[in-house]
Amino acid sequence: MPTVLSQSPAQKREEDLEKKLKEIKLKGVENRYAELAKKFGLPFSTLKGIPIDTDALNMLDEETARKAGLAVLYKTESKLIVAILDPENTQTKETLESLKSRELNPTVLITTPDILSSVWQRYKIIKQKVFRIGAIEVNEEELEQLQEQIKDISDLKNKLQTISVTKLLEILIAGALKTKASDIHFEPEQANTRLRYRLDGILHDITNIDTDYYQKILNRVKVLSKMKLNIHDSPQDGRFTIKQKTVDIEVRVSMIPSEFGETIVMRLLDPRVIKVSLQNLGFRKDLLEIIEKELTKKTGAIMVSGPTGAGKTTTLYAFVHHLNEPGTKIITIEDPIEYHVKNISQTQVNPKKDYTFANGLRSIVRQDPDIILVGEIRDIETAEIALHASLTGHLVLSTIHTNSAAGVIPRLIDLGIRPQIIAPAINITLAQRLIRKLCNNCKKLAKVTPLELNKIKTVLNSLKDRMTLPELNNSLNVYSPGKCSECNHSGYRDRIGIFEAFIVSKNTESLILSSPPISAIEEMAIKEGMVTLIQDAYLKLINGITSIEEIERTV
Image 1 (cartoon, rainbow, N blue to C red):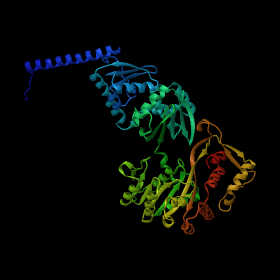
Image 2 (tube, rainbow, N blue to C red):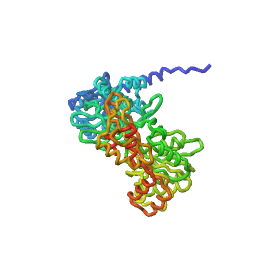
Image 3 (cartoon, rainbow, N blue to C red):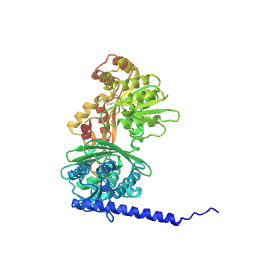
Image 4 (cartoon, one colour):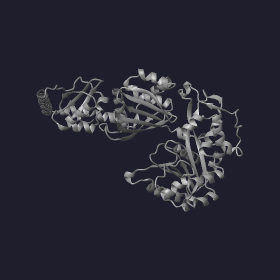
């Protein structure tokens, strides 16, 4: 049997003496800081019995709190308790002033370094809790219950009147997920903070939030997004994850200073959005056949154009899902990676490490891919490498900012690409916009007015010989928006793409070599059968998908 060593009487006396000396030393420190407190007319506390609120502690990040020698212990709408070490410390004074500048009136008490250090230890607990998975800790069942209680925006507004402050962020996220909002906007104003959701591309007012409530939301979002809590006058970016049973929603957060406080925009990146099939993007049957044929090609470039928010990324990912097969190697370079796709290699631009679109693309070509997705072509270097890759055995998918499909060619020439490279490298260019779909539950059928009929005829008359169209006369009926709870009384639900496609044929290839203007390319493309964006929109109108008002707003 192992020998059990017992403590000798001498060792026990030594330990008791050390313990006693420690207590005396601690008492001496407490007395010294109690005297300091008395000198400045401030209370002294060992913090026993004082609750420490982690939301209050998070008003300052750990680095700032330690440098300033203080900690925010407790906060209500009218009360703020701050523990400090030295009232004369310059950084302590500056930090207290910064709290006052946020219209907070701190009650200050003095404590000892050991006690303050034990308070700072709580930052580690917070970090472990929040940053362990970089995800918001929303109870799954609770989030589902909240979503069940919200049928539309009016339900959300009512719910916000009764919800507690601690549950405010959860209910706002639940409401956004339920209503399929793409973005949550917090906009501080003089009296309060305006909350808006972007639904189907349009911003909707939801409610106003008290300044104190918003401050708690702001701090929590900063912690979740790994932003600095003490920075209020510079832009910050971050992201976190909302974990659900069936899907993880990435939230990209942007924060900028404004006149009355920090403005937050949270973009909800739902991976289910980019799992849209080619058939559901909004391609007409004839255009879908063209796209599917182009995607079977092993080389060449497919360029998607349009303004920000036109759905270009969704279209590219739909192409990737269509092409994503076991025998195919797909590599992407994106800025940033918004959606994660299984079985493909995704890389993200990182200028700090010299991993730009151009440098990354050079490396990707050496990885022997079959298909390369370039998030966006912004400069001549990236454009040259992408187009050369399309000429040397790769199918290249990318986006570029232009207003039309034909405009891609002059845009590339403007960047400095020679027409001799553009003409053989590009297979097809697409231009697209997103247009709201009428709510099937409340849309109303009505005869067109003479003015509306004239617009429709002007746009669609040239297609009569190529497509089966209804009679474009006074008997024509089109749909207009109604109002119901299913569409949040907007008359619209979800969005669909409208497209135009410019195919590089032998004739257009010869034209490109002459560095033509957009008008010449468009004229040739229309002559060869291109259906324009506006024509595609009006075809969706006469098919009952959208309204004249929506076409005029979008196109």
